[in-house]
Image (tube, rainbow, N blue to C red; front, side, top):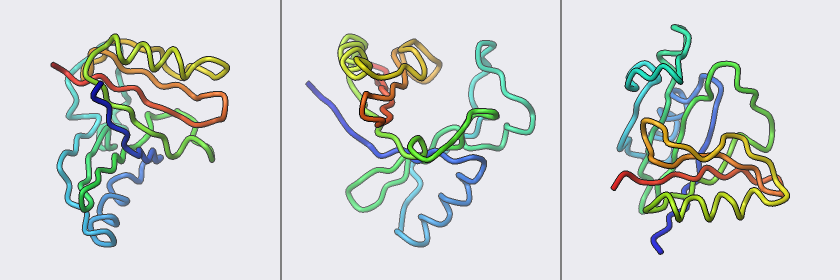
Length: 140
């Protein structure tokens, strides 16, 4: 079973500033960066014009490690405890479903596991200890 854990920092409109800071402070290299406005048109996920410049996803390479940084969707409440999550990347939807179902026991589903434009199986769950996990299935 191939599995990768990556820390994910979620911010409220300051992701671009944070990325620039990490480039300077940690010698991070931006491997990928996409704004909400650059994402493919998807009628299920429409964002207001003022959100188009927010960072939908970025991947920073810091030494041998990766760090994901993004802005929250407009109106998504952020509070201590959900600013940093762990993204679990897996190879297939069956693996994602097994992990998602195990982590949601006694916890809370923040976003059901489903197909989205960037993944055939993506969901967010807070486990019974309050840790937030994003389950991400890679495109094969």
